[in-house]
Every structure is written in C-alpha cells, then in structure tokens.
Length: 98
Image 1: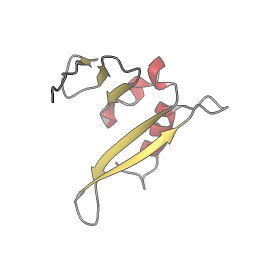
Image 2: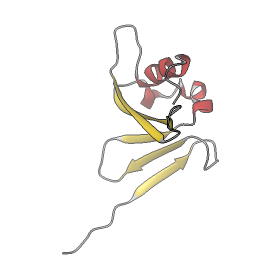
Image 3: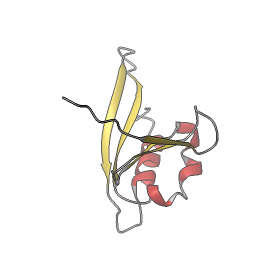
C-alpha cells in the first residue's frame, strides 16, 4: 500500500514556538489553534475564533495529578458569543482550571 504524505502548515502567530500557533492542513477547510491560557485575551479579535467550533482544554487533575482533557463545542450564539468567548468563560470559572 502506498502512503501519501500530507502538508501541515504551522504559523507561529507571535514568532514563538511556545506561543499561539495556527495550523492548517492542505485540502482541509478546518483550522487548529494552540493557544496558551495566558494568550487567550489577545486572540479575542481573531475572525477565525468568532465562529462555531470544537475545543480541547488540557490540565492536571487536582486529585490524581494525572493529565486530563476537556472537550467542548461552541456555537455562535445570539449574544455574539463564539468559540473564543466560550473558552474565556472556562478561564473565568475557578472550578474549570484547565
């Protein structure tokens, strides 16, 4: 079986590999962002994050100290909230410390 390669484009939005990264895959309309918690407020104006989407929040369990992940979905709401605003809601909630 012949395996075809894929082209993945990574854009370091602030020039730092530990900062915000935008990822796109050739022949796919979706986008992936890696946004550090400390950089979320800076991303509020990004048009790509003002739409519906799926997001992953990563952290460590307080009880077991194991890695945990939360998977969420955000839709554009009548009040204008979108994926970035939904993630910021998590950030403001002390019980959701991902």
